[in-house]
Image (cartoon, rainbow, N blue to C red; front, side, top):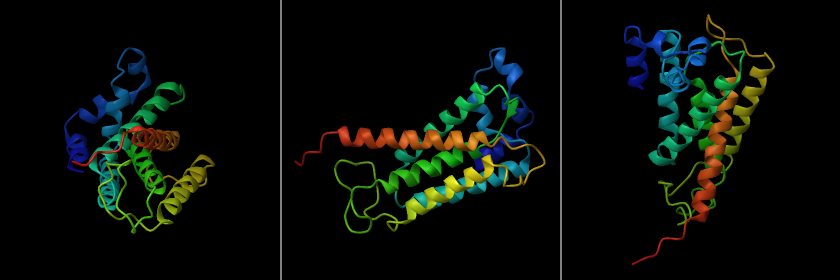
Length: 199
């Protein structure tokens, strides 16, 4: 996504927007959000931008922009909560936690489809789903299981970091939790909506 690269290359912006606990405790609450849009290095930003484009390309046939934005908002909120509440997090920058939640929430949403993927159009109870067909039935469950397995390896220290800085692994789990919560809330809201009446 060009926005991530523009923000990273803007002189002085990454340092000003990243989360630093000392400044946060002095009132810079916006860093909980701004830190997720800047990165600790240009390669870091490039990697997350590439992942963002890949996820968007994968999800585009099956989920509306509105649902994807809602899932991403839940993921961003999850990351913001963990960096705010964890006193051990001295600094933070990066979009990877939000990416984990966005993708995890999306595959959870797809796994919970009422109709059989590929056989029926979305029901009126889920009007925001845009595609008439979904992924193969097992695909969302496999993706979700792999994502959870990855987070398990990270929390156990079994995945080496590809970066020269310390990766704050809890942001990935928090992003996933936020994305899954958003998916559950969206699903509950869709079920509570009255069916659309035909003219």
